Amino acid sequence: MVACWARIRARLRDEVGEVEYRTWLRQMTLQGIDGEEAVILLPTRFLRDWVNSHYGDRLRALWQAEDGNIRRVDVRVAQAAPAEPVFADGGKPSPGAAGLAESLAPAPLPRPAEPRAPEPRSDWVVPLEARFTFDTFVVGKPNEFAHACARRVAEKPASPGFNPLFLYGGVGLGKTHLMHAIAWAIREGDTARTVAYMSAEKFMYRFIAALRSQSTMEFKETLRAVDVLMIDDLQFLIGKDNTQEEFFHTFNALVDQGKQIVVSSDKPPSDLAGIEDRLRTRLGCGMVADLHATTYELRLSILQAKAAAAQVAVPTKVLELLATKIVTNVRELEGALNRLVAHANLFGRPITIDSAHEVLHDVLRAHEKRVSIEEIQRKVAEHYNLRLTDMVSARRARNVARPRQVAMYLAKQLTQRSLPEIGRRFGNRDHTTVMHAVSRVAELIAQDAAFAEDVALLRKMLET
Image (cartoon, rainbow, N blue to C red; front, side, top):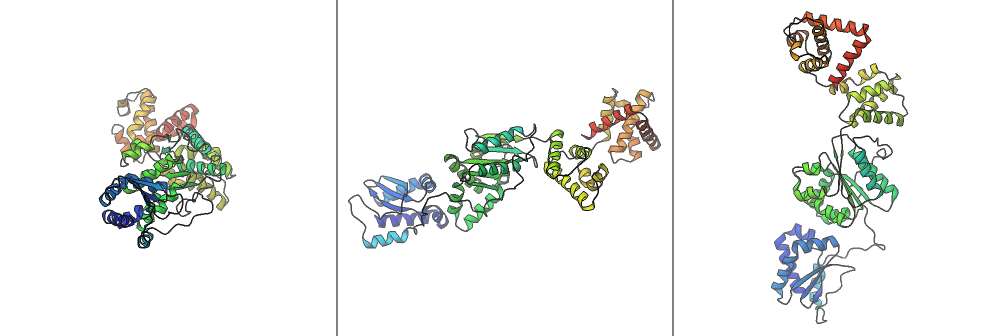
């Protein structure tokens, strides 16, 4: 029987190739023959399941070709060091056959005194940011649901309905912060739990490295031993079919063992074109929570919290300026505040509106809304209950001329257009007419508080 087993292994090696054989089949050992059943041992449950599903039928066919009496092949997990093959008649292999079996079997792995799940290798995971905790996460309407889901997972990992937890949203809205916060909370709540956090890019690079070094089993066993696996920016796996395949099997293995998975992406699972359907379906079977774009109130709260944490007094007007101008990315918002505070500390100057404009001129300019003259005309006409054609007509009645002057003033303030071009957009008027309008509106703003408030309101509506 040992000679049959040697021939079967050789056939498998020829059929699947050396790399695949070394990865999946090299650690098979023959325990023995029991009637019509051949019993094969593998060191882990994962390897047993993989070999059963991918090579079970082929193993049975090869055994039947060697011995017509074999009807079944039972692949089991070795609970101890593989015993010497024993056959149904109670006999044992000859010394020569035993030597052949020993040469084909892998060297026994050292067994720890106390079985324990291996820690994820430190070079495989990303260090957690100490500042990314639940205490430092500012909760608002756009992120309160995602925050509540993250809290639930941190308190009760692998809760029904929350595994996996899929967080999605745009850049800089707090996905990574929440993932780090979950990891910190789980580690503090139960130090025995192992948590592995990494980007999808790092997952791919480590998988490729394992393939090249023929150490895929170490990669698989390490990740399948963790209690919580966290993968950031899953969209990076779009189009990476082999890595998706590996992640899918890792995903299934962990969920089947009752382990928690947390994933983040810039889109919900249903919108991840380029991700396999079976993986996309699995990702959406747990809890999917989105982080919306921030509101003005949330941005202001974040800035106030950051300033308080840094123990720096920043005027409210400055914080309001940043919250109004930088609307898309919380990271950039925090970076602008840090830059402003650093400038004040380095040069010993107070933080003011003027210094904010000076220090952050590039950032503020990049976030300025591009307002068109047509948009200004439309908004002013609506505000004063006029027809859009009145903006370019020859009518000189006060109820038309004044709003037209306001529109010219705002065009000069909010666009890069020259005076002659602005004049042309207002019914081919001369540039001196535009200069007069700008000057007159500026005077009225200084003299009439109600008029100034009216113009300020229009400007704010156009800028936001």
